[in-house]
Structures are given as C-alpha cells and as structure tokens.
Image (cartoon, rainbow, N blue to C red; front, side, top):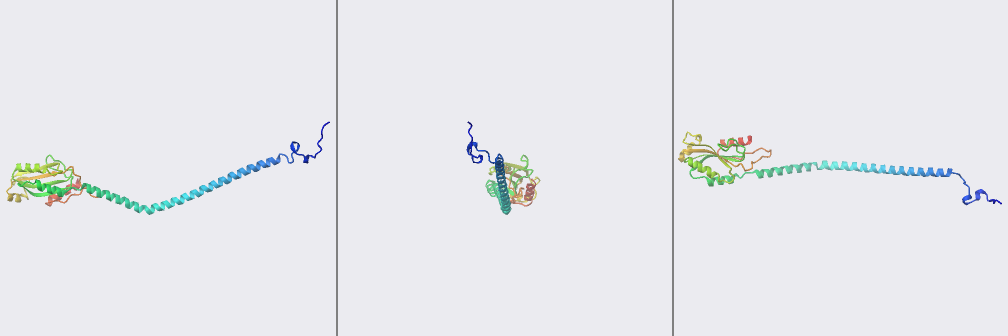
Length: 241
C-alpha cells in the first residue's frame, strides 16, 4: 500500500517541503548583492578621488609656499654669490702680489760701488722688447738705466743681478762707451759728473712670478720706483699685454 502524507504542503518541513516563493527570491538577492558590491566600489573610488584631490591641493599650497620662501631668500643667495666672488678675487690678488720691497732690498745689496743708476722703472708684466736674447717679458720686470766704469763692469753687474731671488733673465738693451752711445742722453750729466763713461740699459725679468691681476681680470702695473716717463711707458705696455 502506498503511504500518503496527510500534512498540508504549506506546513511540511525538510526535503519534502515545497518552494514557497520560487526562484524569484534568489534572483532578487543576487541583484541586491551585485548592487551592494557596485555601490561599495563606487564609494571607495569616490573616496580615493577625494583623497587625491586633497593631496593635490596640499602639494600646490606647499609649492606656492616654497616659491615664496625662495623669492624671499633670493637676495641672500645673491649676496652669498657676490661675497664668494669677492673672496676669490681677494685671494687671487693676494696670491699674485709681487714683493717689490724685497726686490729693491736685494738690488741695493748686489749693486756694485762702481755702478750708478740714473733711472729705474718697474713693470707688472706682459711687456715687449726685453732686449737682445730676452724677448717678451711675461712676468714682472725692472728696467735699469745707468753708467759704470767700463764694459767689464757692465758684465759684472749683469751677473750680480742674476743673484736676486726670482730673477730668470737679464737682458742688455744697450751698452755704449762715451756720450755718443745709444744709452747716453738726459742721464749723461750725472754719469759725467761721476766720471763713468760706459752707459747701459738693462731689463731684469721675473718670468716665474705671478702677474698681479685687477678685479676685472686685466694686468695692473706696479708704481715705478724712480723716474717718470719710462715707468709710464712700461705700465702702458703692461696693460696692453
């Protein structure tokens, strides 16, 4: 005999219980789940966009503040650069300063008793025509005009000048005996009074010494020790060089 379930279908439980609402409830549930996921992703994306916008605004404010600080500090940077440049210029001038007092002291020590200097001029460097065998003078130089007892005394004086510290070359521009020589002229009176008839013109070169440099980078001549016209000509030649 076949068993018959007498419990109404709507009251049954378990596997034998029929669907009360059908598949429509599961479809609605899936749609709601998908909608929830979409809304969640949209909210997360919106929050991320908002965070990026806030970060961009913060960076822009920081950039403006940094530019303002840079503009405010620009004069200090310019002053620092100018100060550094002046320090380098002063250091360069100090390094290139030539010790003329020392040279004058040593010249006085090596000057023989039978030599009379009638004119002495100093040049800072870059002069041309240093005499026979000397060529152009690259560094500081001394131009000596004077007279002595003879040609042998001139040769001894040239040798003595080479003992001055820093002297690299001594050039003999002229040496003549008597008033008709090339070196005779305005200075002949003093030589005649001293009884010296051999007159000379020498150039003493200090090629290894640094040439003094002005702030603009041009050679600056040192003041002449004695004489006026020859010192000015030597300074003009130094500036042109």
